[in-house]
Image 1: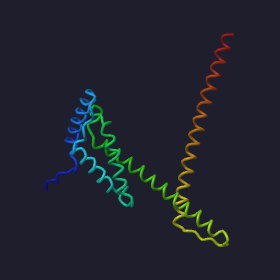
Image 2 (image 1 turned 180 degrees about the vertical axis):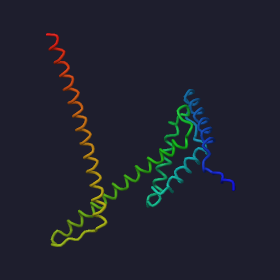
Image 3 (image 1 turned 180 degrees about the horizontal axis):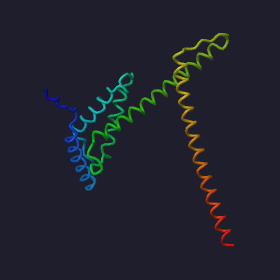
Image 4 (image 1 turned 135 degrees about the vertical axis):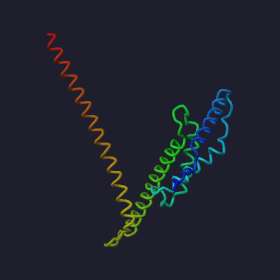
Length: 190
């Protein structure tokens, strides 16, 4: 039995050729001080397909704000079309997939932060309204959201602190070595 031919949803070669044509048109418009040309339909369709297909990956498929992720990905890809350099890369598919991936990650982080703020506000309002009551029960889901976000925030702060301490130690070591070398050179010359 013959192996099945692999069918990609975007032809990278055609996509690259269209990007080269578009960049040439942009360079001509810049040289003549004219307005940049509109992004061709084919390139726009490719960017849309990249973002939609990427959102079906297991990393991103179960988020309730998946449409917003796709929108952010398309927006970032469109704004980065002018930055694609055909002389550096012949793979626009990978370039725009990475841009969409980063846009998805930023959206997830933003939504998690908003969720944290919402649940923290809920918790604070709940505690303020029930100050007179002795036993206060809170929502476990809200507690989990708050706890996980604050733990991640603390990890980030700790890792930054460790990096700063490591840099300080390197600078101290370098300065100490320089002083020792200077004192040895000075002692030999006397």
